[in-house]
Image 1 (tube, rainbow, N blue to C red):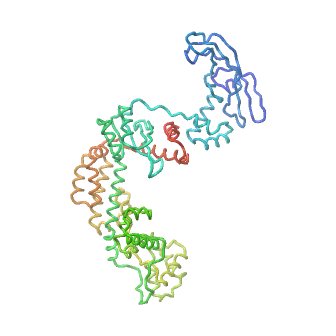
Image 2 (image 1 turned 135 degrees about the horizontal axis):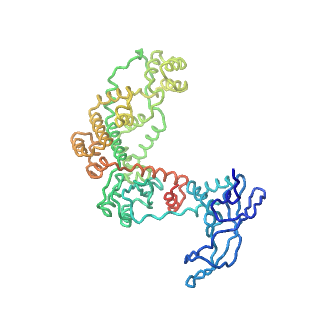
Image 3 (image 1 turned 45 degrees about the vertical axis):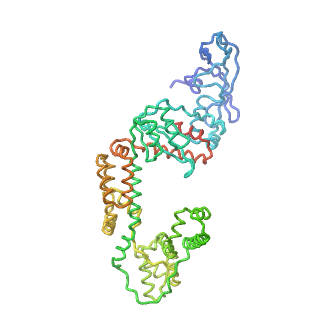
Length: 531
C-alpha cells in the first residue's frame, strides 16, 4: 500500500504545503504555507501579479482524535494593479481551507453551521464543548443566515398557521408542496400579509390550505386564478367533531336503552335500609356549589353577565348556564362528569353483595371475588367504595355505555378494522338512536369519498345531509357548501396539506427547543435553513 503525504491526509485537494507539525498537550499545531496560484481581487476580479507581503493567520480546524487542531497558515497579500479599482491590496484565500474574516477553516465552519441549524444557540455551544470545538452561542447564531425567498412562488403552494403562543399570536408557514421544503415564513396569519406575499411572488397555480377564512380571502384578492384545495385531513377532523357532538346530544338514548336491559349474573339483594344517599364531597361538586352561589349573589346585585364573567374569570356562556339552570341539575351534571375508574364495571356486583350481607361484607373477600371476575385495581379502592356505601355517599351505579369519543372512533374507522366486540357495540348504539345511525351512515359515506377521491358525489351528499341529518351534521354540510369548489378539489385531486403539517410539527419542535424566547428573525432563519 502506497504511503500518503501529510498534506494528502490533512488537506486533501487543497493547495498548501505542510512545513511543521508540533504537539503541545492536547493541541496539534500545523504550520502550512499556501501554494495556490495568485488570487483575484475580490472587487474587480483581476488576477494579481505582484506580491505585497505575507503574514501568518491562525485557523481552528476540525479535531483529530482527542486533539484540537490549529492551522498556522502563511498567506500572501497582493497588489491590485487596476487603477480604476478602489482596493489597493488584498489577501489571498485558500479554496477549501480559509475564508475572509473567519478564524476557523471552511470544514469546521460547515460543522458549526450544521450544529447551529439542528440545536440553536446554547445547546449547540454545550455540544461544541463536548466535541472540543471552540464556539460560543453568539458565534454559532451568526453562522445562521436565512436563504432569500424565491422571486416566484412555487406552482403548488401549501399554507398553514402555527402558534408563537397558543391562543394568542400566530404565524404562517408557506411550503412548496412538490419539493417538500419551506419557502417563507410570515410573522402573522392575517389575510393582508398573505395577500401581499402572493402579490410580490406570482406564479402559484394550486394552493393547499385548511378551511381558515383569512387565507381564502387573501387568495381571492391576490391570486384569483389559483385553484384552492381544501385539506382532506381537516375535513375528516371537522366531520369527526360533528359526529361526536351528535353522539353527545343523544347520550340519553343510549342510557335509556342500557337501563332497560336486564342485569345478568348479579345476585338478587335482600332488603336492607342503607343511609340516605348524599352527593360525595368531591372537588368538582364543591366548585360547582360555590360558583353557583357567587354568580347568583352578583345577579341579586344586578350585575350584568359580562361583568360577572370578568369578575369571576369565566366565559359568558358559563355564567348564563349557571343563571338558567337549577342547582340540583348542575350537581348531577358535575357528579356525572367524574371519570370512570377501574372499579366502575364491578360496582353493581359489589352493591348487590354489600346489600345481601347487610353491610357486614368483608372488603378482602369482595376484592378476591371481583378479582376472579377480571378486576385489576387495588384493594384500597374496593375498601373506599364499601366505606362510601356505609356512609351513604357512594355514587349510583351508572349504565355502562360507551363515551361519545369512543363511538366516534368506531364510526370514523374503516369497518374492516373493527373487532367483533366493537362492531357489536356499535350495532347496539345504532339500534338505540336513529339520529346516531343517520350520522354514522353519512360519516361513512363521506369518509369513503375522501379515501377514494370521489369528489363528484359531494353535492349529492350535501343535499342528503341537509335534508334529514342531525343538526351538527347539517351544520357541517352547510360549511362544505360555502367552500364547495375547494372541498371538491380536495376530494378529487392528489394534492393535500400533509407535507405542510409535517413542517408545522418541525416548527413546533424548533420553537420549544428555543424555550419560546427566540426572535422572529432567528426562528425564521432556523425554519428556512434546511438540515
